[in-house]
Picture 1 (spheres, rainbow, N blue to C red):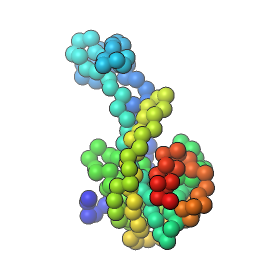
Picture 2: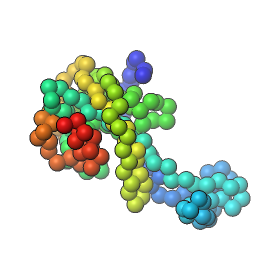
Picture 3: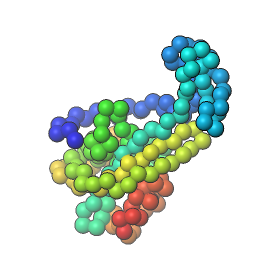
Length: 177
C-alpha cells in the first residue's frame, strides 16, 4: 500500500459499463450485436473489438471500534440519505486496499489502517454491475466527520445497525457479528 496519500476531489466516476457501446473505440465503426460465449454483446464487424460489460470495482472498509462500526449517511446518489460503509470506486492504478483507505479519508476525514480482507461480493443491476472488495480496518488518525459525499457520520453497535443502503454492506457486517 502507498505510504503517502493525496486527497482527490469527489468527482463522479464514469459509468463505462452502464450503457452499451454504440461505436468501436478502436476504429469508429458502428457495433453490431453478436453472440459471444452465449451472451449478446456489441462487436465491431471490421476489427473484431468486443464491448464486454465489465463490472466496476468498489472497495469498502468496516472500521471497528469497541464492537461498533463507523457508517456514513450518503450525500450522493445512489441511495442518498441512507447509511453505508465508507468506500467507492477503485482507480485503475491502485490496489483495492489503498482505495478503501483513500475513500475513508475522502468520505469521513480519517486515516485508516487496513487490517485484512473480509470478503468479495457482487451486485448486478440491469445497467451494470459492481464487485465489492470489503476490508476490516481501524482509524489511525483523525475523528470521523462528514466529507463532501456524506451528510453525517456515526458509530453504531454491530448488533444494532440502522437499515443499510446496500445489501452487500448488510452481508459484510453480518459476517462480523
